[in-house]
Length: 91
Image (cartoon, rainbow, N blue to C red; front, side, top):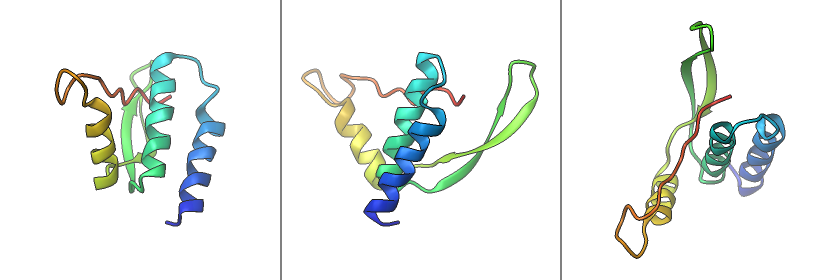
């Protein structure tokens, strides 16, 4: 995927899901945008809704670039796990 395609994918996620209420959903949007920008592959996930019914959705897996970015983001003055990285909850 080209740099422009990665950026466009991240923007599409922001537009499609960014308006959904809830900090846990916003964290998911940010994480998915970062995954787009770091070239993560598309994967199919299974979740349950509030009624307990299962549904599938597409999200992004992990790339080496993503894993390296998360590792760096968590690193700080108190060691490699100074900060958290919240992957959130899919809306």
